[in-house]
Amino acid sequence: MTLWLASTTQAHPFIAQEYWLQSAELVRHSYLPQAQSWVYLHGGQVVGFISVLNECFVGALFVKQEFHGKGIGQALMAYVQQRHRWLSLEVYEQNLRACAFYRKLGFRQMQRLFNQETQAYTLIMNWAVVDLHDA
Image (cartoon, rainbow, N blue to C red; front, side, top):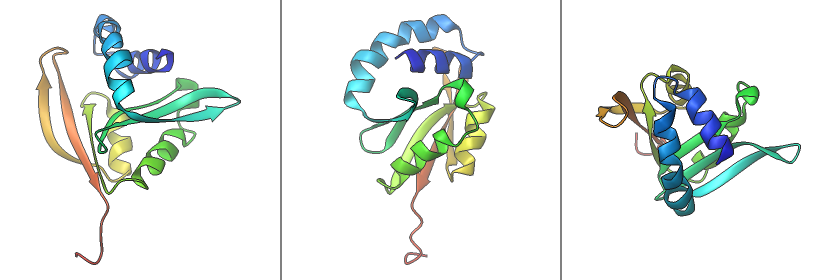
């Protein structure tokens, strides 16, 4: 939860920090217990994690800021992509770094939605295994 709160507020400076503070209990008691999560350890410390809900929805992918650009997010996503044939996620459009990261990993934008609570646009992005036998 500490990593989630620090990372989400850093990644979303365009959203009031109070929104994330109010969301913390829902994340702690609802989303995380329902999700399958994996962590990335460095020196025995959690420096990144990914959570998947309902076998297909990437609900969270966060890496400590000082570990950005070191391949941790890519390693976590690759681990999940090896276990699923199809994934979906929602990302804030203004989070340009995350949008570019997901596109680089093969995610494609499917929808653009307006989030009333945050007053910001989000993108629904999907990824699927390409089966060359079906092509």
